[in-house]
Length: 572
Image 1: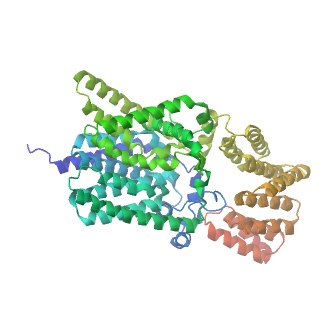
Image 2 (image 1 turned 180 degrees about the horizontal axis):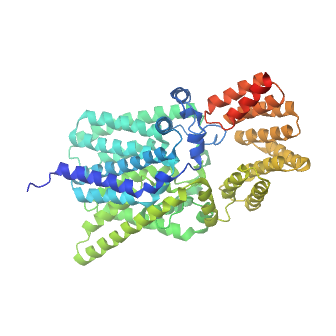
Image 3 (image 1 turned 180 degrees about the vertical axis):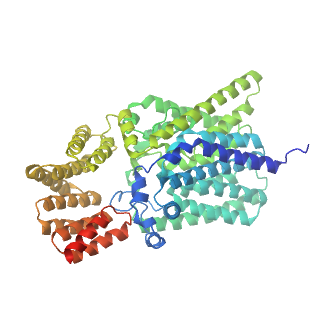
């Protein structure tokens, strides 16, 4: 019987990784859209047609009015949603399948990367297997909007592998494709700007000729030039504020503590939760500093035992992509710390575990460590499989989070919106109670919900109350409008005021409020409301125009047919 060739072994193990990842994340195929998925996919007119996508390619990743403060430019990530929509429509199964396959491809790329570094098949396979099973990946894979991390990793891993092949083979074609993958990574997520540093670390590997090293270091300048062009485009298209303006050297201890959090997430990701409460961050000082020190000790060990930890040393380049999120004060998202931010750096865990086996010379110690790794792999599999339940649907997601973090008021607002969506008097009353609870416990310096919660309360008072309570809601909305500097808050305040005037049948005043909202930003919901008000003013011609405008922005707009029929019937 002929022995299996190396190429065949690699193909078999690549297929094994694909199978493991697909089987592990099968439950996600039954999941619905969640959180940002509605803004990026369900309600996003920019992915519905290729023309609308092209027209918005120079705009922010998140469209107004939901997250105008998130100054992201991620055209490749948006394009991936466009492709999925063209194939699957609004069937979430297809979007989840794409995430699963992207995650599997990332594991396969890592296998090839570490094989070319070590020239050892089985260690490279187990490194990528541990990466596949890592519980911190569940958020990025099971949540459709986590795709930005998956796509960014796909092209960063590809760029690193191709750059490594370029250094070994000295063929310019590998460098060219590495540059292309690096550029695509930039278009998927901002953290790819750090790839030139990772490439420089790869060049520092064992190359005997100093002249070759110097020549290759010059190539880093071209990567840096691409970074500069990207940053200029990013700033031009998003009007990105200087996020570093919040940075202070006083934050060094805060950064060390955050590094401790991510050290724990990478090396000991047990009992994960889909939301990292900053209250938890504030309460556990000592534990996170201990993890930070553990991380430093491991880095020192790897540096001092570079020959024994060869793959681990080169996996440190993936830690570079954690740098942008180490200061939570400059992160414009909520929560400020998230499991998905550790997606790329989590490579380090499997690499370190596998090379520690080779470092242990004593047979008994080695067997004990292998037994521990088997237990860890089993525990991670169970954790990853069960953790996916947190991302099943919007209602279950937030109900579970409220149980985990009952003192976090920001988690009550999505529940209040869900209740209010039914329109029943009992649910509107329950929604108002939740909003009042959120306002009562507000005070978290990391997530101030006073304005959005106040506007939601104002809206509930206007919609569900008598004229007296509606007046109370109007006063609250006007107070928030006068005091806010945020465009999205002003926009929603005008919508609340419009609803108040509409309820009092003051239609010209209602329309004036909607026009003020339009001056801030255009949405399908806004134009639908304008159509309703125009129709109630018996201005059916303009009502139909606004309705068509709304439909063009969101083809899946609910109640469109019903309102159009009403307008056409009464305009005859």
